[in-house]
Length: 221
Image 1 (cartoon, one colour):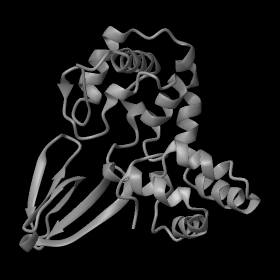
Image 2 (image 1 turned 60 degrees about the vertical axis):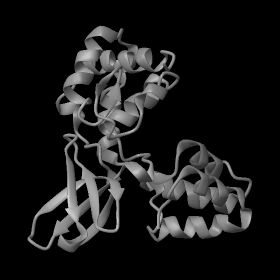
Image 3 (image 1 turned 180 degrees about the vertical axis):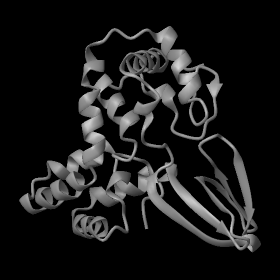
Image 4 (image 1 turned 90 degrees about the horizontal axis):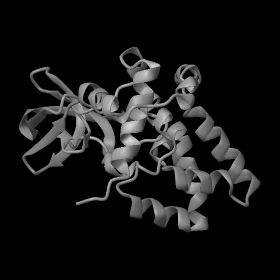
């Protein structure tokens, strides 16, 4: 199932009689809890119904990867560091530009980072180190297997009656004819890989966050 867009989510969450059905769908994994954005998640967690709060707390607690949380905890020192946006631009170019576009650099595969200027450093740190904690449905990765046995993974960028297009984490477009397609399934996870802490040390992370906040604060042209 999943959410097709933010309008669909808002409609579902505005109707009290549908809340139980939505929670049940998340419990049955037909809606992935990580697809629920921060605003709607908070609405459920603070709902006037104790039962809704109880179920929501369990669902969203289950989406937190304990190993990812340990990494985030280990990177808390980043929040007290002075980041250099100029150096952060190089970190972005090296590690993020394959899937993200910012400041005229990179590929627009993942979310638009130009809107991140008002994000707090703690929120950015979580988004970078635990990309599966909250992911929009349109950025969930799909795996396609062809009849010839080839496997492709990436964001589902386009669909037609004859083909589908997946964009992988290197920004490469893979067009697969439906006549060649044997299986297409969602991984239920963000196309953004985990494990960036292996490539980005704490100071580089502080620089990257400084760059994201500086660029996001720039007026759009």
